[in-house]
Length: 295
Image (cartoon, rainbow, N blue to C red; front, side, top):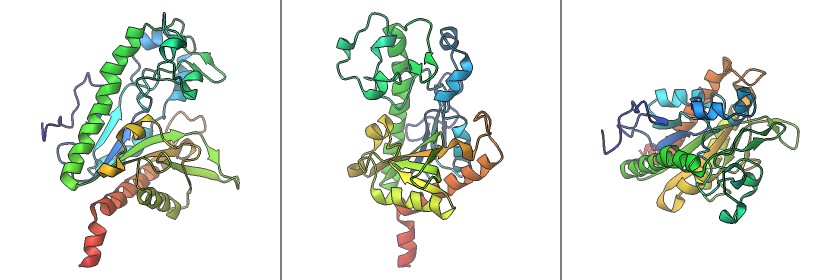
């Protein structure tokens, strides 16, 4: 233990892994909530579709894109279990009543558009695939996942950001995701989308710096379109407390093969590009560049 934080080697029964959290050398935390590939047997036993369809819910191998930043000493938290088990980017209130035994919509009066579409805290269905589960889940099944996997992840993110802020006076959460290919109005492929909930979760200058970084290396970048960020940013981005958070979506075509199944050699260069972005942001946040300029 260091500063009340577990050592880097997370317990084998933990639903996430941690890196570089014994010393906070940087004020940037990398979060990877959707790349988990440890599928619990009870999930697979209840599948109504071939297991391969669940890969569409994964941010496939996006944890590899955090590897260079982790090797440089950046703190990171990476989910082990898949989004099909529990979606860490949804509120605990976003339970889909259509997939729970004995539950009806009257018990969840404020159902979001995503939940209605089948993508609640536990996904129910996929477009062009249909319902994922043979049988409805018990409410206890869902609440157990929330208490065992969802809340501990968020509590740890909160703890780490608070620790980083206590050391550096500030902290930034880079929430790493991947996306299917999207194109801008000029039909150019967008390599990266940065979301900050339209300025609510992060000071705009950090988003602008990150966007400029990726553009400098020849990539098209959009902000908040088509992805502005979800519950993770809503819960953890607190600019007024000098805790900032933005979501970084990476085009899967940049680092996966044509079938979007396995990483290709280019994944290393994308990982290094994200690492250099983290280094640049850390310098900006800590004010090192200002200090060096003053000297």
